[in-house]
Image 1 (cartoon, rainbow, N blue to C red):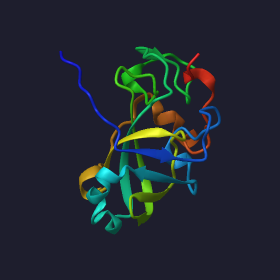
Image 2 (image 1 turned 45 degrees about the horizontal axis):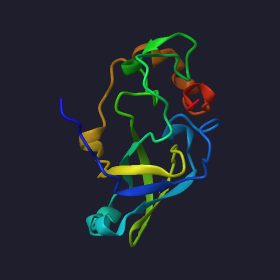
Image 3 (image 1 turned 60 degrees about the vertical axis):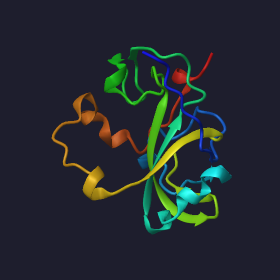
Image 4 (image 1 turned 120 degrees about the vertical axis):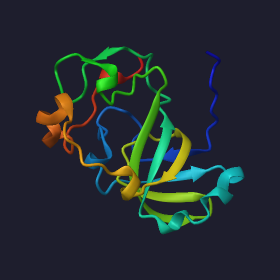
Length: 162
């Protein structure tokens, strides 16, 4: 297959300058603020975004090491298949976070509940629409017994570049 090439449309700015100690999901980052700097050539695409309370940020895990098909995820001590986890060490290191949109200032978005490393390249923004994006879930696999720890668990060095 031919290579698929994406270009960053902006940069995500957060208080997290190192991956160790970061929240592992937005639900563990309640109240943490950051900003999304959209490059000027894409700024016109932000028209009408201010009417949404939440947005989906798609981004590149720029500090993730080479992918592995088996990982020990943050909430577990057992090795799991990569695609049954949200570990950042993926063949295509893409991240997704749903964050609260607090304000749109020209080409800068003020966001909250951000769990992303400072300087992360932004690939896309989509409005979060509960009627489209929220589903009643019957099963969460191996995570079912660990969900109470999602809000309090912080990352460690297991997925840092060596």
